[in-house]
Length: 298
Image 1: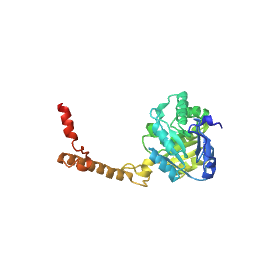
Image 2: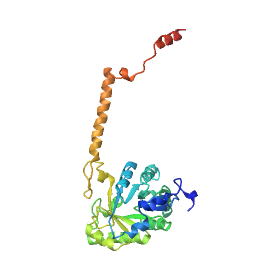
Image 3: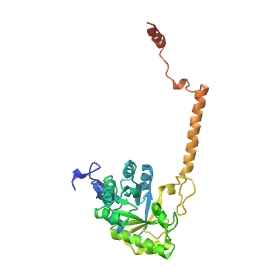
Image 4: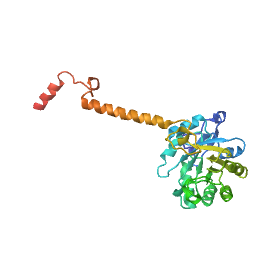
């Protein structure tokens, strides 16, 4: 490994292994350390359940890493990549997939290009809702891909709207085939959303993919929940499958009340002549104003 390929100023410390981290070079050419690799993740299939979240800010990403979350997904907008890049910097040691927009790639070539753009910013993998054909192209280019099956919200018109999928034999078989197509296309993992728990248990046994469960019970290899749900960033109603471990929206509401109160008091002070008081102003030295006026009259 040559130092000229580093993207972060140099090779990570040699004691990375002692800290439970693996030294890596990203597909984008940057050295780093990670808690997991694709190889390591796949080796853990069926042995223990991993924890995954999707943070929406660098602060959430940093908190998730500090808390010991195994893997993260962050949303990647190719037109505004800074948010994803900032989350990458905030959680430098956590395996992170960039979730790319479904409509950002309209061909296999564009899928590869979009994947490379994300990987150049430090992504360890790509999360997508692409067809198996697009997944195969990206995987063939060396990009680790996590697909999406079950309820795929942006494709929900095909499955009858935002509802559970897989509660009939036809739907259950369809979900299984979708996952096997992703497996055959070269993906390493699949997010499985809102299907019966028992169905995911059986599918997980029959695919080499890491199955990331969101609303699909405990049958997956990874348990996934959005940071918005974990932290309670928003008020109810909540998705049935989500659990709120905090209610930060209440703190936000209190902060907003405090903002309004602060502005209100400022307005009242200004209009009542209480602000600015003597302690907030600069006084002219003795004689300065007289000299100033005299100079103007000359």
